[in-house]
Each structure stands twice: as C-alpha cells, then as structure tokens.
Length: 220
Image (cartoon, rainbow, N blue to C red; front, side, top):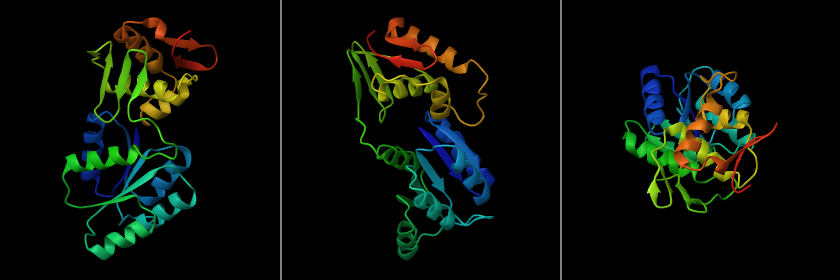
C-alpha cells in the first residue's frame, strides 16, 4: 500500500515513515499542509496519516479537501488533541479514524492496515490463484503450501498483479503503487523485481509480459 505521512514535527514524521517502510509500505513524508495538497493532487494514496495542527494549510482543511475531492484515500488523524469533543470534531470532518499522541507504533500499523482493507471497491481478504495464495494482512505468500520469502517490493508487486485479476498492470502503475516518490521512473527497478519474483515463484511463466501494456499474472 502507499501511505502519505503529513506531520510538521520532522523527527516524528521521519520516524513514522521509516517504521512503515519496514512494514512493507511505500511512504511519502511531508511537513506542511501546502505540500500535502500538492502531493495529493498528483499521487494516489491508500491511507493518509494526518496531523491536525499543520502550518501552511491546517490539517482540518486538508481533510475537508480530501473528502470534497471524493478521494478513495482513507484518513487517519494523528494528533495531540485527545478530548472526546476533539475526536468527534475530527471524525466529523470526514476522517476515517483518529489516534491521539502519544501512540503505540504497533497500534498505528494495525489501524493503517485496517483502513487500507476498506477501499471503495471490496477486495478479497486473501488472494488465490491456483496453488498460489497471498494474505495482505499477515504479509504471507505461499505456493503449493510452501511459504515464499519475498522482499517488501516483491510482495507488493505480487499483490498488485493478483488484485488486477488477470488484467495487465503497467510498469508505471506498479512503480506508483509499490514504490514511493524516491523511485526513479527511468530505472529498471520494476523489471528487476519482476525477474526476481518469477524466480521465487518457481514458475517464470506465471507472470506474463504484455507488450506495451505491462505485466499480468495467470495462465497463458
């Protein structure tokens, strides 16, 4: 999944970003409301972790604009405002969840994953294709009963391909969904990851290269 962290306390923002990347997520980090709106205008995020008291554009206004744009992004407000009224106000703006500071990082991860499982379209909890199974919540992929040792990027690419249900997924889409803004669009990182993934699946023919369309997973 791709996550946008909007937090003006840079140490906390970078720490949360690093921790979420270790959990296999693609994460962009911004420190004010103006830059947040710029990122939201050009990128699609599964979850937005939003500090309420932001410089530039207040977090409340950022939340309002996300909702007004009918974005599929889920909003998790992460803020020091912890009274019941403040939480109710935050949810009333259209936020999907609310976590007061200080917080437990494991709880943050659990809430982010829970929000990501509530997209506009209902997606299966576990993907299955023949003897291949992928469980996004548990971060486990198996083939023929054997657990596959996948890197976070390999897991993300496999999840995107399975979610497409046999339709081709372009390299650009994979780069957007699995990598963050630091990825160079002119590199061969997607092609390299696909090659490694084919090897770990033990069935190179399972992932097909579709000329001028990208990649798809399934039978010929």
